[in-house]
Image 1 (cartoon, rainbow, N blue to C red):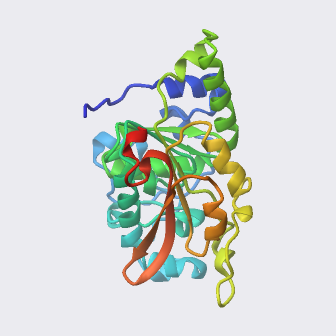
Image 2 (cartoon, one colour):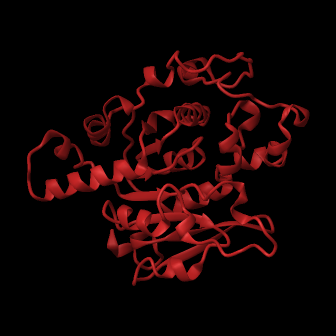
Image 3 (tube, rainbow, N blue to C red):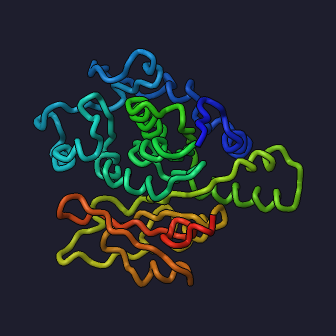
Length: 298
């Protein structure tokens, strides 16, 4: 599979048409209007990657005593989150509890190998990095400029920043616009923005917010409903995504209602448990050609 590096894809052209200045160019990622903070040297990036260095945007913790009490249990797992954490991987408070552990992200990325994958809620980049190690191109969306800057910083640390396009956008708005333009393309409108989506999205990875760490409060843990997915209910989010591609990977809580998952589609669905050691962390549900035995759907 050939490597295309550094080029701006049709999806970025589409994003500029649909979202204007929200496309995160390198200059936007280094926007000086970001809140000032005290920089702290952590020896993380080689000089050739220094333009993506976000050191100082958030704290880099070396010792447990430096970490806020509510984050310490995540800090103890830092090497499972990013194996290169000691070299300067950065996370904001939301990133600490929401990033996919690296081994799990790598496993999902193996299942999702393709030309172009869209990471709909990329956060601080845990999944996007693993996709970039295995796919031609990754489109990474998030609504937080800070998290996108951290994701690009972390991607540079892993040497894959040039294979990821970072877009500041709400996925729901992006998906609705993209699906609409796909419809126009099928009708042959000849519009510039429409033509740009000819660089199709092969796979969409959905890892939407589950509602924060409290999603699993209670003992025994209550069953998690897709209705609690954010920013829109999980069934609606899935149906919107299927307008883009039939090949979807849906990362969900380990206590998600399997009855609701099964009701998403009247066709074969594959559910893969994601374990870290002896602890079940989450499940990933595969649809379309990502399901074992349905590869002919590609």
